[in-house]
Each structure stands twice: as structure tokens, then as C-alpha cells.
Image (cartoon, rainbow, N blue to C red; front, side):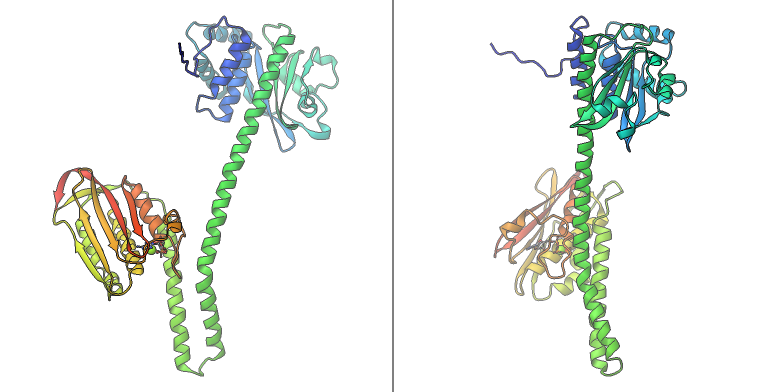
Length: 450
Ligand SMILES: Nc1ncnc2c1ncn2[C@@H]1O[C@H](COP(=O)(O)OP(=O)(O)OP(=O)(O)O)[C@@H](O)[C@H]1O
Ligand SMILES: [Mg+2]
């Protein structure tokens, strides 16, 4: 026989051993899309809920900038509140998710909460941190305090706020590094803290330390990825801008040196400077335009006029000289979903690339296909040099270019705008034979247009 069980157990029966209840509460918080703050709240909940360890109150301190700072304090503020809360929480059918919800509401309640009181507390760590409460995390040991007023090592300000004589300090550590501390007490029931309470609190301390450590590592990793991406981008942009700037600088220096000597030479220099300035303008335009995220939602439009407009574009006409352009466009085109202005730009990019790749005498084909019920496809095919296998995976990456003076943002832009309106871009290519790009637009459900 083969039996299967879900990993998510729901609530463990209330009469199960409290160790099991505690571990189940904490382990299941991994299943929830909880933030670090929420996960720590779950641990404090497990430590204070009657079905968990059952302390009356739990405080959380976090280490920050060489100090231990008060962050949350969970528990009732008076015996009456304690009684009413425990009554609600022991109602049959109330599970740990409800308890966490209840506690979250308790923490965010304005005015008179315990958390407000400890947020003003902060104690030094390091060499000056040998008084209680800092001592537990500084020495990496659990400190059980009984009769605190008689112990000069206990910080008086802390005692005034906690207001009880007996409490337990549990350190939160990651490989010796102090991360924080949990402080537990039985302010209302006045029950003594037992050996088994201490062991369970220790387990919670280890798990909470682990939570904080993993969350910090995760954040560090995300920051590093972000910085690496920014660094890479800065490198590409610097590289793109450097060549035209160096050229402009060099030819301007020459102009200054030979001023008035040779008008033909001066004019040539000025023309080069003008061309390089245009190149800079083009790079800056592309950087600003092609990397900008789309703000507006896509809309239904007729692709016909845009396609014809791109083919009639004077720049494209001039560039295509010496090559044939064969356009076979459907007379009636369906309405498609996208960004009309960007689609024109996307097409011009693909036509531009096709012409760049096609030698004189070659042909560029532009064709539409309405055969698929869902997709309207625009094909741009050339008989150019094709794309090398090693470049195939990098085509759509920003700044990938094999062209002298190319920016490498054209295909990246086309892919981004196609995907952001539910469409796609496909590519087929054979080295030495040619390349075909396909823009696949989602058709609008109804309506055709000429
Ligand atoms: N039709 C094509 N045939 C062969 N290679 C192509 C074709 N289209 C794109 N490529 C390759 O993909 C690279 C990236 O194209 P993309 O349009 O993104 O940038 P680019 O044309 O180099 O520069 P720009 O940002 O100025 O358009 C090109 O440098 C070229 O190597
Ligand atoms: Mg291009």
C-alpha cells in the first residue's frame, strides 16, 4: 500500500505534546508568504500561545549598529486583557493563522501597546554589553533571571519597563554574530519557568536567529545582483559614449591648431564632428527611449497603416538602395493588441537590421499572415549573412551588438514591447543564408479593418 500525505498539516490537535505544536506552528510559517517580521511574530506567538510553550509575554530585541534595540513585545497589557485574550485564543476552531492575525492586529494597534514601550529601549553591545539584557547575546548563553531587583547586573531602566522580577533571556545568534534577543516572562500567571520551557525557548531562539540570518543574506544577494547589473550597464554606456567623444575631442583639437590655415581640412573636421554628435544623439535617444518601461496599457489597433508607414519611411527607402524589398501585406488586417507608436519603431528596427545584414543585390521580404485564429504574424526575412550560433542566445540582451557603432538595444526593445502586450518575437536563421524574424501579435477578438 502506498499512502501520501500533504506537507501542510494544518493545525496539530490541541492535546498533542506542546513541543510538537510549537514546531508545527513555526515550520508551517514557512508555507506562508510571510515577511521576516511576520516570521518572527510567529515565533513570538508560538512562545506565548497557550497551546505552544505558554509564556505570558515575549519581547524581541534586534542588534543594530552595536546596540540591542527593542522591536516588538507581544502579550496582554493587564491581567484582565490576558484573561480575555486567552479565552478567545482557546476557542475551538481557532488555528495558528488566526492567532498570528490576532497578534499582528495587537501589534499595530495604536496607543498603550507593549511594543511602543520597548521601542524606546536600547542597550550597548560589545565590551559595554555585559549587563542584562545585553549579556545573553554578548556571551551567547541563555540567562534565567530570578529576583531581578536583587541583582545589580540587571539594567534598572529595563527592569522598570518589564516590571517583573523573573524572566528568561534567549540570545539570537548566527555563527557567533549577535543578531538579537528574545525575553520571556510569566507576568500574569506568575508560574515558574521550567527546564523544559528553557529548552523549547532555546529551539525558538535558534530558529529565529536562522530566520534573521537568512533574510539578511537574501537581501545582500539581491543588492549585489542589482549593483552588478548597474555596473555592467555603466560599463556598456561608457564604452558606447567613449568612441564618439574621443573622435570629437581629437578633431576639435586639430581645428583649433590649424584654425584658418586650410578651409577644406576644417570643413572635413567639422563634418566628422557633426556625424559623431549625431551618433551621440542617437545613443542617448536609444538609451532613454528603449530602456524606458511602458507606462500605458496596450490597446487594439490596425497594424496596416503602421506597416505601410514603416516601409515608406524615407530613411528606410534611402538605406535600401541596391537591395530589393518585396512586401506582401494582407489587404484586410485584423485588429491586434499592442502599442501602435512602438510597433512602428519595432518594425523599423527589424527592417534596419535586415538591411544591415543584406549585401547589395539581396532581398528583404516583408509578409503578413492571418492564418492562425489567435495570432497575426508579421515576417521580416532577409537573404543576408545570418546569425552565428554563438550569438543566438545573446540577440535580445541589452547592448549586444556585432556592429561597429551599433548600440545593441534594437532587438531588446522589440522583444520587451512585444512581450508586454502578450505577443512574441521569434527568430530563425541560417548562417550565410539569411534570417527571418516574426512578430506575433495577439488578435483582438472581433473586428477587421482594411
Ligand atoms: N537580420 C539580421 N541578420 C543578422 N544578424 C542580425 C540581424 N538582426 C540582428 N542581428 C544581430 O543582432 C545584433 C543585435 O541587434 P540589435 O538591433 O539589438 O542591435 P544593433 O542593430 O547592433 O544596434 P542598434 O541598437 O543600433 O539597433 C546585431 O548587432 C546583429 O549581430
Ligand atoms: Mg538594430
